[in-house]
Length: 325
Ligand SMILES: [Zn+2]
Image (cartoon, rainbow, N blue to C red; front, side, top):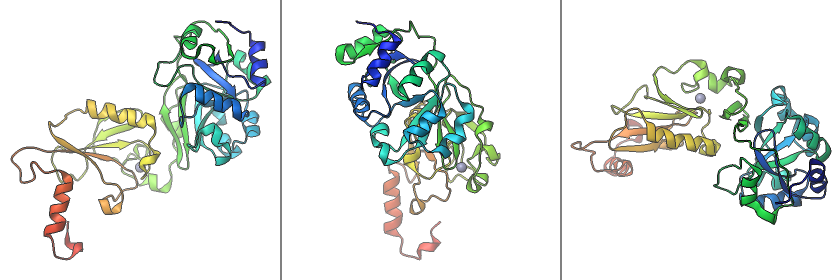
């Protein structure tokens, strides 16, 4: 492996190069964010289509120059410089950067060595220096095992095993949501910015309206019992994000969902996992949630899935629709 100096890496980047260097958090594979071809090459090397990297910059004005909405940046710049990445919505003109996802993470770095590079190159897109599905590189040798001679440079920064990944937050129309607590700890109260529908929502914890105990919680969700449950022993899994849309739930969220399903405090042996999605499906709240409905032997409904029960009700009923409870 041929190691490069900082200045050589800067020259390569300005020339459309793609390489690995120590960022303010972990080793990252980087390319100049304004260089469409270099960014496309970087994503191809990572085999990470549709999962955009994070854009790091020396200051906010570099991000404005790149075409990021000033209004979005104004809401988060008080946290920078620091290891806090903030995902903001991004338009189609920067499709090559956000890979068609409409969102991209940004941060202004605190690390003087990395800023020295960014001041010369402009913002860089960075993604962890490993192939998709592999653990992040802790040493430059780890990174070399992933990319070999397919990239243009490697800058050594020693063993970074003790470093934490960046904290990730997401800017939404409704406020700021923490997706991953990492190097920077953001207190939840600092992010609260309730809209009208959140201030009356039983599942938005900041308004303290939840009347049932929290049985399990993680960064992205919590588990509680429904207030008026038609079935004894039912649980609901509630995203912390106030939304009606499944597509608003991040990859990090689904990871927490997997853990919640595994670690449920009292898990029935048999159950249905169900979501009432949309008003005709029975949803009356603006905050989606998943039901865990316990099922057991010896009941009239035993052996039938929920879809079958819906069909039985619909087929056997001939009275007015409004009288079904
Ligand atoms: Zn809510």
